[in-house]
Image (cartoon, rainbow, N blue to C red):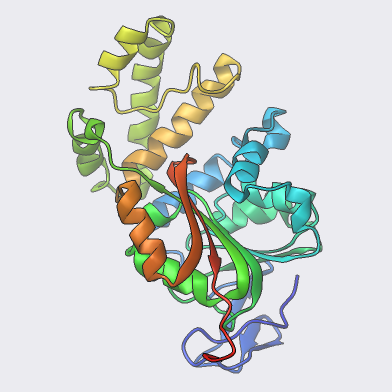
Length: 320
């Protein structure tokens, strides 16, 4: 745990540890369960905190004995992950730490945060690593100075924040010039408007977080067996997806039925309880990355929809 580089997200002043808090800024920031907290847990991501603490190990490669997460991360970065060894990497929106685990495996110095209490699940999964600095913070107010990180990764997160552009801009701020930013985002497609996907979400997201997880569990219990019964019938699956509120991954991942069921429980909750939900086209995502002052931009299908890979520009001598 590296506590020597935190700054106050309000004043920008350097923070230092005193007892169970970081002080020197606008207010003390408590360290609870060995995790510095820059925000309270009762925020728009509260449902995600409950989710990741319930499904702590569901998507970890070490738990599924697969390389699903590692493959996704490698494709997003576009390089051998061993190239991250010794580099200071910021992970924004860690959830239970599925990507944290892989970054640590490949030798990165990982600074990982989430807006929700999911940081506690990540700590349980990965907290024993001395190369991990875990904290709870707002993606719009990251408690680090400009140009701190060699690489920044944010997967499965941007569409759930108040503003994709504001999030990208802040992620770029803390990235070193010449450093790589890797993100993904839900993509716009007609299916969003020709199914009950959004109506289900509009109803469920208005429930309390505790009630939401009960409802999505019951929906998975009802709809998963229906999906499973026609799992090899592509037309039936296509039609069923128009009305079903659950995520069903048969054919997408080579996992046993019981594991697929757990993934359905997790992602059915995830898709139906997010406070914010946005979809982008390839062109609009490219434009957002450009507005964040990034260069060498690549946008391609992958991850949660589109993957965006870009570099923070190095200032020229005339502009320095």
